[in-house]
Length: 482
View 1: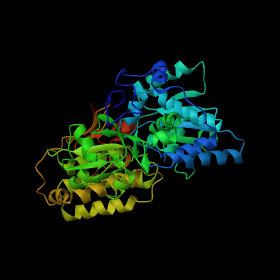
View 2: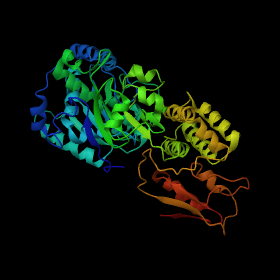
View 3: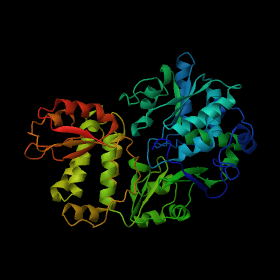
View 4: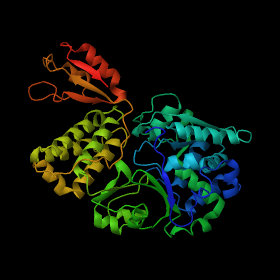
């Protein structure tokens, strides 16, 4: 996926974040200032008040109030030496979401404006943007270079492209040169983040929204969207099209605008999100209150309609497996629980009967509330929501009849950049079982103690372990094949 997927752009009504892109594919600094004008400065208390007045909440998934983050960083800094840092999360490891990528590729200066506005208010001397894509890194470095004469606080950090990279502590760890993995510690970045300093951490769209609000002021900002949820929001529809819409816009209208429909159902919020059945998708509006009435959240803004000609159960199974492979592998719920959940979903889809249905439920319960980060809970919720919206599909698969449709890959996943396979030579294999000890994330044994599959995909991150298994196999029955 790195540097390859580039979104199409669209909007409903007058664009704000995407303003100016009808005349140019990317706004350099001169074009940015022509479209948006100069950026005003705000003392920290006025910036807090602005964020409260426009009800600015984080657009990266959790939806935490931005004003509370600002206050928390300010409070922590006052209790210490006053130093702070600002971090922009531009990692976007969610393969169904491209909105932050669109901002950083096409209007990077709007994001920089928001980050520097916050840094000026807080007195922060360090502003870091964490990214994972080649093209995004190039766009940002060009934008930073344009501002170098006026401001040298900003730097760009390149991080590995993984789902968990965007978790707060993982992002900070990666920026500081460590592994981009969650720390598992319940420490807020507002108290101790980059370099141990109180750190304002939010995602790309949040800072861009802040820059727009600072120029418009609260009253004008609130002229778009709902009274209780003003402004616009960026969506990624179908994993390919980024659309800016006023809050409260009909979900069905946005799908129609993008040449789509609810199909068999719509996944809202990405792979930690929730499924909406077609009737709900046709009546839901893109607002917190509307989606909450369907037990859904907008999350990172991903909207994924499932077409009629693909198998829902198979689509859910392949995403669940990918989510298990994307785990940090640092705690039991991730290292053991999510692969076991993926196995259970595979068994259900393969006709495992009612015991397979019960096993999926048990595996979901076993990871809830126990992870070092939200990944186990989010993955479990994704599966639970699918079971609730597609009950007949999963029951038919479990009982052996299935739906007769192929899995078309309608839910986007990144292409494997290293499509290697671990292959078993059955003429040599003696069933020693050492391979499963070395590669529990890849190898499963059948009832007789032999590998359950003869060909198994090897994610790039597990290649060193796969090579070790090949070298240590007593029967020399394993090999890696491209």
